[in-house]
Image 1 (cartoon, rainbow, N blue to C red):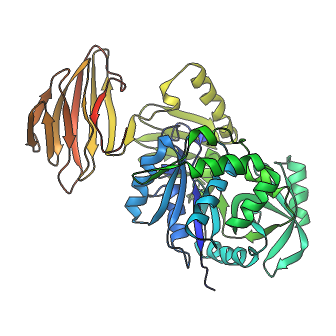
Image 2: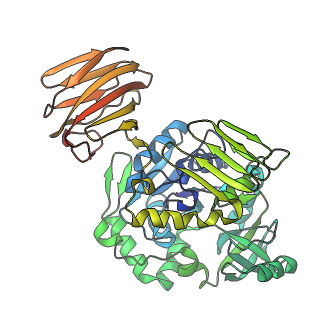
Image 3: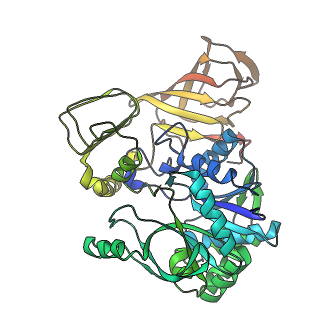
Length: 472
C-alpha cells in the first residue's frame, strides 16, 4: 500500500516532571537519551521517517526548546516542513489545529499522523502496519490508535470500541473513559472491548478542521488567526501570541474525539509506553536476571526489581529491593518504585522554595552548543563550554564580570574589542569587564574550553548583545 500526502506531526511540549531529576523544564524527557544514545524525540522522528510516502516531518514545540529540537533534527538529517513554536502552552487541540492549517497550506489533500514525542514503542514494523490500517480508515474517520492492553493498568485512559468494523482493521469508538480504579480496569481487560488510549491519531487535515470548527469554533478561529499572522524565523515558524493565547486550553480528546460521530480506533500491538513515571521507564528497559534495570556506571549487590540510573559518576547499591535511584550532577532521587509517581510532590516543594533544580540542568543547551557549570562560589564560576562546528556565540559584553578562556579541544576564533585571533589547544585569553567579545568555532570538530568568570554578579542575564545569528 502506498501512503501519500501523509504529514507526521510530532508534539513536543511538556516538561515531564514525573521523571525529575533527569527531566526538567528546560531539558525535558523527550530530548533526553533515556534508553539508548537517541532521545525519545529522535526515536519518534526515525519511526515516522521510515514510513512509506513520508517526505518530511512537522514539529511543534515551545520557545524554550526550539534549538534542541532543531539540533536533534539536524543530527538525524531528517527533512522538516517546519518547527512551529507555541508562544504559550495550550494543550493538544490547538497544537493539532495549527498543524492542520500548516499542512493544508502546503498540500490540499494532506493527512496528519499525530504522535507525542515522548513515547516508547517496541516493534516498529507493527506500528507501521497499524499506520497503514489507520490510513485506510481515515478517508471519512478521525482515527486514534488504541494499545492492546498487556496488563491491568490504572495509569492510562481507555477507549471502548464497538464490535462492528468500519474497515477490516478499524472499529467504531463507543466511548473514551478516564483512568479507572483497579477493579474497573480489571473488568475492562476481561471484556475484551477496551484499549489503552495512546494519544496518537491519523486523520485528514480538512476533516479535523471541519470537526474542530463544529465543536470548538473559538479554537478554530484563534488558531487560524495565529497561523495566518505567523512569522518565519530561521528554521522556525513563530505563531502570533496575541491570537494563540486566546485559544482555549483543551485536549483533542475533550475538544473533538469524545464529541464527533466519526471516531474510529485501530488496535496497536507493537508494545507501548508513555514513559509517565520511573516505574514505566523501568518496565521499558531490558532487565537482568534479578529484574534490575540500570543505565550508566552502576554496581549493585543483592538488589532486585530496581531502576538505577547514573548520569555523572559511579552509583553503588546494596540490598535494595524495588527502588528507583537516579543520579544527576546536582541531585539524587531515591524512592520505592511503587511511589515513583509521587516525585511530582517533590517537584512542587522545590517550586515553592524557588529552587533552580526544578527548571535547569547543570548542563544547559544553546543553539550554538552547550555549557555546563563545574563550580560556583560567591564571586567566581567555572564552566565547560562546547561550541558546535561552524557555530558562534553572539557579539556581547558583560557589566559585572570578566572571563578567562582556556581551549582544551579544537580551535577558537576570538573577537575581543578590536582584535580578532585564533586560539589552539592549551592556549588562553582574558576578556575584561565591559569589552565586546565573541567566541566562534571555525573548525570541523567541537570546540571545548574552560571558562572562569569572576566579578560581583555572575547571572546569565548580565549579557548585552550587539549581534546574534539566532535572533535573541
